[in-house]
Length: 77
Image (cartoon, helix red, strand yellow):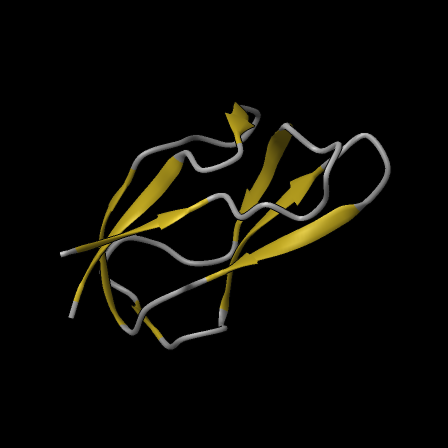
């Protein structure tokens, strides 16, 4: 089982806000497929899956403040 984490986008970004899930538990995802939208202090970006498989657990909810490197979902290949 693999975990999808909040990626590091820049030197100064340490935290993002989860705006919306684009995928749900039970859905299949491919590498580089957008799974959630997040907002930094400057821009809105999509978090993409780093692995292919089925989302088996979502670890964060919309509105949560997330740290860079924090796990947000678990995927089973």
